[in-house]
Image (cartoon, rainbow, N blue to C red; front, side, top):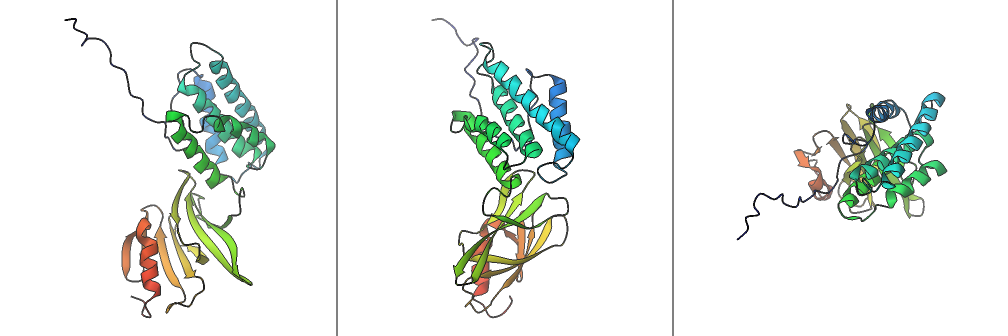
Length: 260
């Protein structure tokens, strides 16, 4: 019998899933190009989209083109045409364009199509979804959601989707977004929840005044404090409520006439 234990085994690759705008160290792209990407993102995330400084915007537009060009070069090379680095370069180009050109621009739409090409493609699919979450968090107004308020450092945003539940009866369905990770921290399944007001108590804590249409419960509204950093909430006498459990807790509180 031939001993084959010394031969290398096939490697099982994990799905790509790194929160944008992060990017792993790339071996096929120059260090200078990667440093320029990191430097641009560091500056760009401090301002609203698109960046309002003309010089920085022009640098971003040039950088996005160079990143995409490098991806195309690798994709045309038989030695590297299957490299994950092609996707990472495409994603970086699109993120730079998002900040430089703005979410509604035709330029960003073009870069976004290159990322969308990879949707559903095996292990890269999860990374495309991470990219889309980042765009959703940073690309407003890209849909009907509005920014009701944001933390002082813009790490967290309270988004609301207004809809008319009845004649002139408006509901402002809330979501809390972590713009750094491109993730949704809080969203209610029942669309009748409305955030009537929000006050940021600190960089990571926001107090919401919530009601549930049509408002005929024993309690008309509730005060809730969301700790975005810890992913916990306080409501009534309850503390350290997991955000995934919050909607059920609030439903129970609404049916009580007392504040406990």
